[in-house]
Length: 281
Ligand SMILES: [Zn+2]
Image (cartoon, rainbow, N blue to C red):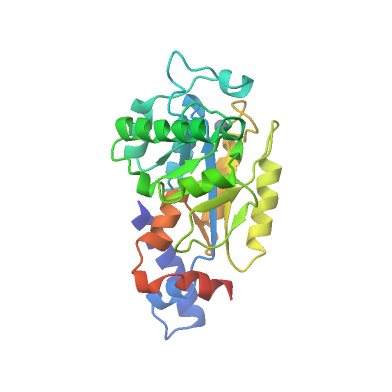
């Protein structure tokens, strides 16, 4: 599906190239426009209806959605931590495996949505371990070394961050919304979110800040669509936003794990941080 867009870009590029720089090949014209901004909308809580619709909207734009789900939220014994999760049915691993199969990224968003700042260190690490074990058991091909662990309430502690480093590829917690370009050794991703009301304005503001920088990686923590979840966005807004972002040459819309895989882990080791050095200059 990426090929179609590349083909379109190549065609659009050739028109520009032949008009302005007739001696340059299409390939050179494409290389002259490297990605400089990454936008990750990181959707939490695993609402059945919203996550299906989100996946469909990303597919419409030939993109992969970043979907973070709670290991036990579909189980009978699950005690929702508040009205925003209690109010809407959650999906199960049959659905998560199906969406993963369709190209979306499914990542852990805790075992049972406990705020790990409010429990002991031992209990917190036990809950993270149970979460990762549950994912390994239920999500096809799950590999902690490629996973991004998404803290509930974006609430971590320095001790837990240290403990998690090396156990997963990366973790997402609270902090600034704009991260450095993906680089080797990056295991901490920070994000912001906005709620409980509609968070579209907050996303627009962060995107404006991102685009004003030479380079950067925006991670914005979103939840459901329309009326579902804390700080929702409208499905129609998401559709228009992806339309706008995919039309920008500098922007890559990616889930968090795929951003690390594409710009760090799949690159030769001696080429580390090439992008960050070149593009932040
Ligand atoms: Zn959550």
